[in-house]
Structure formats: structure tokens, C-alpha cells
Image (cartoon, rainbow, N blue to C red; front, side, top):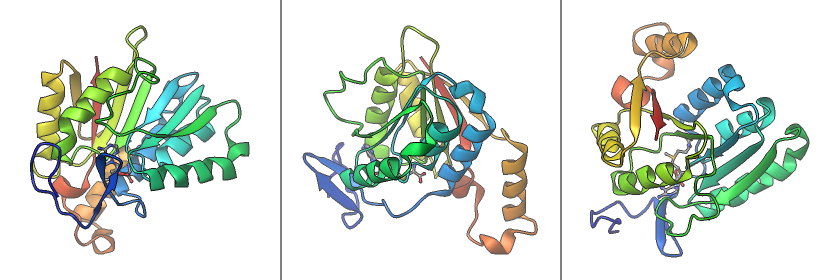
Amino acid sequence: MIGTDGQWVHRESWIKVGSYWVLDIMFSNWPSEDVLAHYCLTHRDIFRSKKVIELGSGYGLAGFVIASVTEASEVVISDGNPLVVDYTQGNIEANSGAFGNTAVKSMMLHWNQEDISSVADNFDIIVASDCTFFKDFHRDLARIVKHLLSKTKSSEAIFLSPKRGNSLDLFLEVAEENGLHISVTENYDKEVWKCHEGFLNGADRDSWPSYETGHSYPLLIRITL
Ligand SMILES: C[S@@+](CC[C@H](N)C(=O)[O-])C[C@H]1O[C@@H](n2cnc3c(N)ncnc32)[C@H](O)[C@@H]1O
């Protein structure tokens, strides 16, 4: 299949949705999502009364954690794959009693969608995990982050992403070219760092034999306008 920038991408794991292609990985929760959910739990205060959107949510564990424990005013859990969005909607309905006063919605949002007027300039916080390795979509992802972040209040995007070759660095370059400001933190949480060291050299090595820092360890990226 030809991606949006003319590059070849492997066909089997992609599905066409209208005029868009998305990676069909709805039946997996990636480890970075667990770390993002943990980060949101341990920093729950930053979400209080905020409008939050998760991009490329997959199962949306982090979005559900924010919806359940942070007293955010609104949480939108979005993905470009309609099967994922349907699944999320079902999960929202099944857990509707768990969100207190937080309004929780699922949303079909593809990063290269032209019309995003209903959500532009709307969010205090964007969260995303493991969404930066699709080089075909770097420009779209940077563009959508820029459009969604609120221009009138302080706002930021919180990404957790492994380096995955040079893909994260390339995304950060594109984001900076789009005028976004970036900070990258390697060691941002004691517990996560302890797990990282355990998988790398310690007692937990056998539980994740293919663990490799560049491919597996999510860095914390904060993006502001
Ligand atoms: C690697 S998965 C990460 C899922 C989840 N955040 C996690 O870490 O478990 C990337 C997600 O982004 C979505 N996605 C991929 N390309 C997209 C695009 N161009 N627009 C919107 N969503 C996209 C996929 O459907 C998928 O759910």
C-alpha cells in the first residue's frame, strides 16, 4: 500500500477507512499505554477541571484512567480506526457510572482529517502513547496537536513514546518545524525506571526477553505551543 507521502507500507496490518489508511492493531494494548496510564494516575492533579483528548488511543487505558480518577471536565478518547472507536464507545457505556461529573466521549479522529473545526483550539491537555513511529503521519500528527491545543489558556501535549529507530527524533524535528516546543525526559518516574532497569539487566529480564531500550522504553515528551 502507498502511504500518504508516497512511501510503501506493509498492507496486511492496515485497513482503509473512507479515504484514510490506519494501522489495524485494535486488539493490543502497547506497554507505553500502561506507562501513560500510570503517569496520568500519579499526576492526576494536572487534569482536574481540564478538557483532555487522547489521540491514537487503541484501547484507551490512559483516557479511561483520566476519565475515572482525575475530575477532568471532559475526556475525548479518539482514534482513526472506526473499530477502535466503536469498541471505546461500548466501554464508555459499560462504565458510565465510573466517571462522576466528567463528560466522556469516543471520537473518530484521523490525524490527516481536513475538517477538525469542531475540536480545534479546544483542549488543555492532549495525551498519546506510541503514536510517533508512523513516519507517514508525522506531519499530520504535528499539525493536529497544534490545532487541538487551546490558544487562550496554557495547554500541552503529553506523549509517551519509545525512540523506535529514528522515528521519534524525526517526529520531534517535524513538530519543531511546525513551531511546537518540545521537552524530552528520560527518567521521569522512579517506578517506571526501576521496571526499565529490571527488564534490562535485573530480575525481570526473563519476563520480557526482547526488551531493548530504544524499542521498548517510552520517553516522556511534553509539547507546547
Ligand atoms: C501503536 S498504536 C497505540 C495504541 C495505544 N495508544 C497504545 O499505546 O496501546 C497506534 C494507534 O494509533 C491509531 N492510528 C494510526 N494511524 C492513525 C492516524 N493517521 N490517525 C488516527 N489514528 C491513527 C491506530 O488505530 C492505533 O490505535
